[in-house]
Image (cartoon, rainbow, N blue to C red):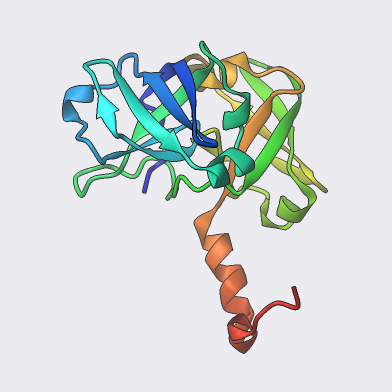
Amino acid sequence: MFTGIIEAVGKVIAVEPVDGDVRLHIHTAAMPMDQVQLGDSIATNGVCLTVIEKTDDSYIADVSVESLDLTTIRQWQVGTPVNLERALTPESRLGGHIVSGHVDGIGEVLSRHPDARSERFVMRVPKDMAKYIAHKGSITIDGTSLTVNAVDGCEFDVNIVPHTLEHTVMGHYQPGTKINLEIDVIARYLERLLLGDKAAEKSAN
C-alpha cells in the first residue's frame, strides 16, 4: 500500500526486454535507498514494482506482460521521469489516500492552463472507468493522490499547486500525455459488494 504522496522524481536509465516482458533500471534521485531492501515495493508512476536489485541510487524491477498492457510502461524510454514512493510502514503518516499501486487504466491529458498560481489540468479516462470518477473524490494519477475538481462524462479536471508541479512528473504534462490511473479502492470494493449474490456467478464470457 502507498499514500500517493511522491517522495522523489527519478528517471528511467535502462529498459531491457527479457523473454517477452521487460526489466527496468530506475535512478532514484533523492529517495533514500539505504532504507530499501530487496523484495520491497516501490510505486513507480503509480505502478507497484518489486525491487530485485539495487545500488545506492537506483533499483531494478521486472515488469510482467499484464503490467505492460495496462500501464504506460511500454512508452517509457531512457530519460523518462517517474514519480517514486516507497510502500507504507506501520509508522507512516497517511497524507494522501489509500493507494494500491494497481493501475486500472490509461488516461490522457487534454489540456492545461494557469489558474492563479496553480495549473488546471483536464484529463480523459477510458469509458469503462468514468463511473468511478466522482466530484471531490480521490484519484491517483501516475502515483500522485489528487482530488477531482469537476467531472463531465469521461473528462475530469484537477487543480495542481506549485509544490506538486515542482515535485512530481506533472510539471512535464502536455496535451496528449498518457497517464496511469488508479481509482479509489473504496469504489472498487463497493461495486463488487453491490453485486450481492451475483458476485459468485461466472460471467457469460
